[in-house]
Image 1 (cartoon, rainbow, N blue to C red):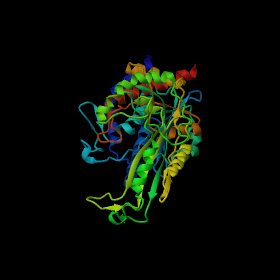
Image 2 (cartoon, rainbow, N blue to C red):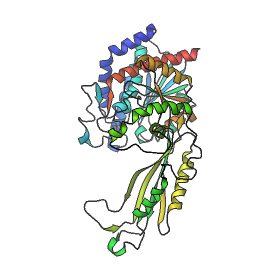
Image 3 (cartoon, rainbow, N blue to C red):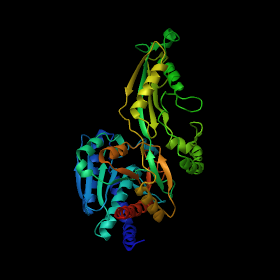
Image 4 (spheres, rainbow, N blue to C red):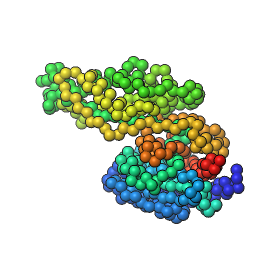
Length: 462
C-alpha cells in the first residue's frame, strides 16, 4: 500500500459518519421516475447530486432530456491520463405495499446491524455515491486524481433509460472516455466480491387472443365457441418441452456452449445457491443439463410475466370471455439478436393458434442484446487486485442474469467497455420492501473505487 492510498483510506474512515449522513439526505428524496407526481423529486435528486459534486471540486451540469434530468460532472487532470466515466442513476423504484416496510421508505434509518434501510439505498444511490466519495477522498488528500473522471448520473434507469442513448449521441464529445464504471450490481455474497463478465439481454412481446366479439353467458354459449383463456393456455403451454427447453424455432441457433473453465468454477459456486429453494419456498427448476447458475447467467430463457383474461373481480361472473392476453419476455445470451428472437416467438405463437380466433401482438420496443467483456481485459484484472486488497479474498467470476441496456450502448456509441463494480449485499431487497445498503459496504466500496482509479492509472502508464 502506498502512502497516498493510506491517506485516502484514512480520510474515508475518518469521514465515514459524515458520508452516511449525506447519503441519508439524498435518500429522503422520493425520486420515483415511474410516477408523474414525483417528477419534482427526481429533479430534486439531480440537483442534490450536482450540488454535492460541485462542493467536492468537480464542475457539474444538469442535462435536461425529454423526460427526467441527468447529471454530468467532470474533473480533468491530464491529457495523458486515462478517462473513466462513472455511470449511475438517481431515480428509484416505487415503494410497493407500504405495509410491508418496517419504516417509511423515504425516512431512511441505520438499523442495529449498520444497514441503511430506505428505497434506493442499494439501487442505486448508495452505490453511485460511494464512487463520489472515492473521488472526494483523492481530492481532499492528494489535491488531484490519478485519472480523469466524468460522472453521468441519470434519472430514468428505472423506466428503461428511454432518453439515454440519444443523450449519449448528442453529448458524445463531452462523454468520450477510455472506460465506463458502473456500480449497480451485487457482491457475490456478503463480504465476498465478484467480477462480472457481463449481463443477459432481453426481448419480449404481448400476445392477445380474441374469440367472440363480447363476453358471453357460459350457460348459453359455453362449449360451442372458442374460449380465449383456454386457447391461450394451450398455446403458451407448448413454449417449453419436458426438458425445460424453449420450443421456439431458431431460439438456440446462435447460443454458444458455456466455456469449460466457467462451468467448473460455477459448479463449485452452485452449491451455495441451493439454499435459495428454502429462502424462496419453492423448488429450483430449469433446463436439463445445466445447474442453477448456468441457467441464470449463460442460458436463454422464456418467462411469462403476466396473464389476464375474463372476470377478475370479487365473487363469480360465469362468462366465456372475449379476450385473454399474456406478457412474455426472453432473457438472451451473447450472440442472440433481440429482434430475431422476438419475430421468431411471434411467428411460433401464430403457428400454435387454432382457427376461429384472432391473434394480435404488441411488439415491445424493449430489446437489448447481452453484454460481455473479455475475462482478460486489463481493467478486470485491476478490479480483481483491488477487490482482494480491500476485502481480503479473491473475487469470484460471475455473470449477471439481469439486463443493463445501457452497456451495449456505451460500447456502440462511446466505443468504451464497461466494468461492473458492485457492492451491495445480494440479499439487499432492491425493488422490494425494506431495501438496504450496508454502511460497511459504503466504506469498503469507496476504498475499492479509490484504489481502482490508481490501478487504472498504473496500467495506463506502463
